[in-house]
Image (tube, rainbow, N blue to C red):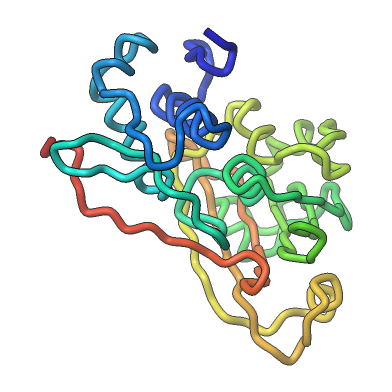
Length: 257
């Protein structure tokens, strides 16, 4: 069994998510052909030593991402490739993981500035901090296949300043912020994301090569751990002509199956 096929029992990443990543990698690599049936729930339980509930949750995760499709009385099948897929905005993954891991697109990151700073009042409120708190700011421009796609500003609370200040790979645009935060004990437990059409500031318009007079989509996200600790607020301005936003809707309740 390859390293990628092993469930890491010590990882903070939930088992179902690890299994979903393994299966998705098998689909993207061609080990599981597009349109082919995935292994049965029992086969996956036996292979990975997981409970049936965990396996079902992993398969549901793949379905919610559009990677797999359940056909009643037949099983779960790998979805056919679809061109032009975007960022699944209700998912746990950030833009970088989504674009590289699932779309096999080329992402480049330019860090415009980073460091400790006085957090804006609205960010302090979102992070449940006193006004005037010092946190960490990370401002980046992300390009997809050479085209400017996102302008994002992440704000983190004081407890994460040492973690971020020493993360050279993240601060030079060569590593994932989400992965860093998870490894530091701040794995995503939940988030609130608000999408609005707003006029970008001049800095944003210039970085994304757009007209400042034209409104564009802006996402404000506040993330917290499973214990409810708030640890990340970001504003991301999206060129939806380059990277469309996706929302998958699912009505199947795992508890009914």
